[in-house]
Length: 88
Image (cartoon, rainbow, N blue to C red; front, side, top):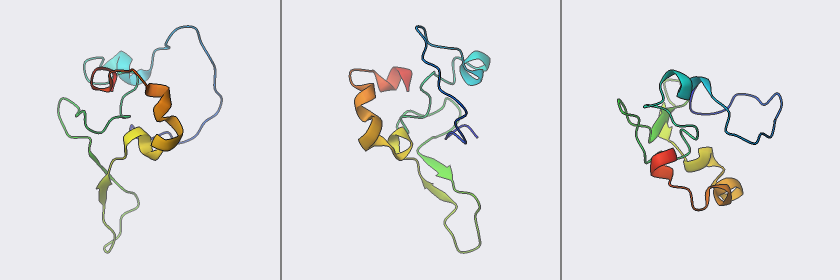
């Protein structure tokens, strides 16, 4: 899935921003920081909600997408000064 990380295998620190699959394949649709800002919509659909899995007959299947994937308190300072409408 695109909206959130599934597992972390390792972290590498680099001097330059690395390429990602999504922004290599569709740079006009997916920025490097894509999906940290649910207020910026994908060119073809909205990103302010996401589908919760697994869904059941009695559970709400769509939930609000949280800015910074719900980790705003922990990571928002890392984006200080960044134009999140441009780099989303």
